[in-house]
Amino acid sequence: MVERHDPAALRRIAAGVMELHWRPDHGYTVPNSQTYPWLWLWDSCFHALIWDALDDERAVTELAAVFRRQSGSGFIPHMANFPPESATAEMWGAAGCSAITQPPMYGHALAVLAAHGRDVERFAEPALLGLRHLFDRRRAPCGLIRSYHPWETGADDSPRFDLGRRPPYSRPRWDSFHYKLVGALDVRDGEAIGSSAFDLCPAGFNALVAWNAREAAAALGDRDLLDDATALAETIDAVLWSEEEATWCDAWPDGTAASSVRVVDALLPALVTPERDRAGRALGLATDPAAFGLPFGPAQVHPAEETYEAEQYWRGPAWPSLTYLLWRAAHQRGLGIEAERLELMLRRGAAASGFAEYWNAASGVGLGAIPQSWACLAIVPDADRTAGASGE
Image 1 (cartoon, helix red, strand yellow):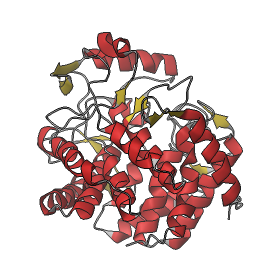
Image 2 (cartoon, rainbow, N blue to C red; image 1 turned 90 degrees about the vertical axis):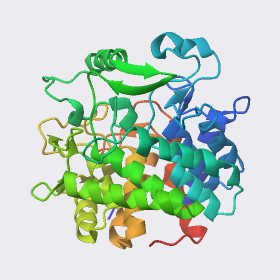
Image 3 (cartoon, rainbow, N blue to C red; image 1 turned 180 degrees about the vertical axis):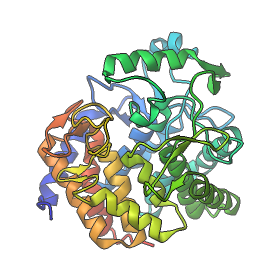
Image 4 (cartoon, helix red, strand yellow; image 1 turned 30 degrees about the vertical axis):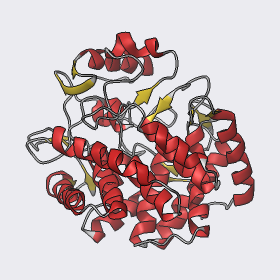
């Protein structure tokens, strides 16, 4: 059992980190003022949850910022900068935002804020439009949702996206690769509609689309979207589940297997799978010290994988966003032991790392930008429990 940290102390630190990174002139929280001085889609959705846990109305203001750059088609860019808008124009072909998206965490954020009595009615239409956009415009022939760039998944440099690239890994080499993938995008009206170099159906990304659609549909009473979320969850199981590996694989648009490297974000279908035993097995691996479950959080890459590197970006460290999502899966499934372990891992990692962007899952050493706002997710489970939210 990992050591318990004082929730009140973590809450005070989290409040300070969030205040440090709040931009009142733009109405959102930057992840880190030096490394990430703009808005990122899923970061701001997590920030809305954190402001809510702090009982601060900026939760609603933060969520509003997510939809500010939404297009008429429903597309929501993964990044926006205010100002200077010209900073992204050359790269993306549009001023002020990117042409790709990120996991639609606004479905979950809206549901949590609504359950806690916050006025989020004005977000109903943009949230449903954004989720419908993914189902209608990103559907692959196999029934899954396509991603056109690793950045869309949130797990930027995951070994699942090596796809034939030879080791050794280096972040500068991958950054160059990512920029080449931006050049391979087919961008029309400010959004990517295809790619000549990256067209994949990742397990984690699909799980987050299905879960956020389910969360929003339940909160807003949208039966059609709920049916689509259920169907996508069933397709994830049918196409991506590997009994041998006890994980969900990634796939090409035709449904053939792309990668089964053991990464913890590929366990996120535990959020939506109709097979409770699969969810239990996945979450058991996330917390098992002999698998992903290291002392300061689930390692992003299984330590037994050849590609595991304890302190390399998306190649092994623990990420607060993923630990939170796995905690949420265990909590909703009523898996109390796994939920408690994940909550304590998240607290311990945030405290040991100085609220870092990510950290060494074995030692807790902080990595990346320090402090990073989404590490404040460490306070959400306790606030959720205090608010009386219940699992499934």
